[in-house]
Image (cartoon, rainbow, N blue to C red; front, side, top):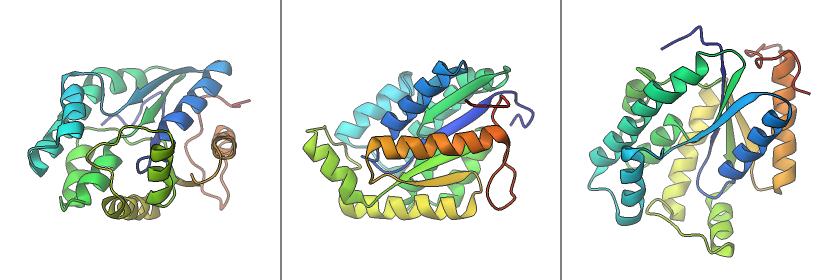
Length: 221
């Protein structure tokens, strides 16, 4: 893992229906408008493993190992061929929609050992500089999907998502790079909080005296 990277890595996580993709795109658009060299990435990717995952999300995975291996290989290739390359360049920002914390939460909620998932991913996957965990009770996300007539996948039932949410929040409680954001609010309020937090990071200060790694420029405005 390259600890002397030059770029900046922003991640959005959370259970289904929290608005991760929407908020990632809003932040990406804001960064581009401010002159940053930003790119949006997501999991599953558009590669061969990512396509296999999307098919399984509709039809069902063969077993837990099938799910774990597909997500890990999809991520491994993305890290090797895109993420490391982007982070090795000055003034570059990745805005990511899902990453290995989703594996820890979603597969961990099925009984796969969370420590094992964390260990195998940290062997090759760089840590994000900041993780925005968009959080609300599962029924909020499921209601949004019902209201928008969005297609649901095999992960989406309230009891299971409750376990997934618990694991996400447990991860946030022990990782200083996590920022938990109330995703039950309207999009504009969520976006405003995210931008406010990024402004703090651009200045290199944070309430409580803990100084996070600043964004790649001195000012975000």
